[in-house]
Image 1: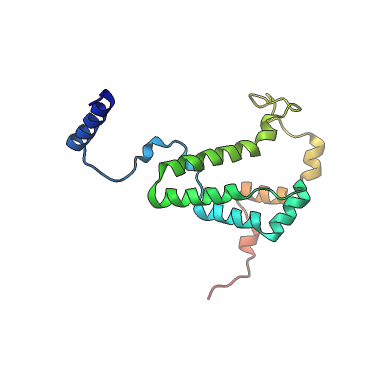
Image 2: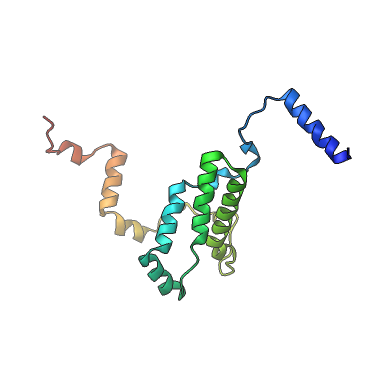
Length: 164
């Protein structure tokens, strides 16, 4: 008997003696399961991607049809994850979602035009200029805000609705 075989046999013995043998997979090893969407979402995305309207849109935007197979793979992995908590399918789904999110935010991360700030400006809550307050004092929104501050609401007192 080799050393690796002995280790495997010892693992089997300890798992049989100390722990109850359950057939449920250990899903606690998966991080970020919150990114997994409902399976119907992946199915809908695949149907939209392969539809005539979707293909026309792809041709208009990209100049060619895009590959929709990832949506199908994600749907299949989601079904495996939902039905039997298959950890490999869950991991593949999480990786796919993270890749999709990174692609969507790529322009944000690659932005070199605007400087990102760590905190808001010091005077972010200063009062509006006088000319702007005068311009906006007679608007519908200003009137509703005034009514809410004062606690009066003309619509409630002038209601013609009758419940019988």
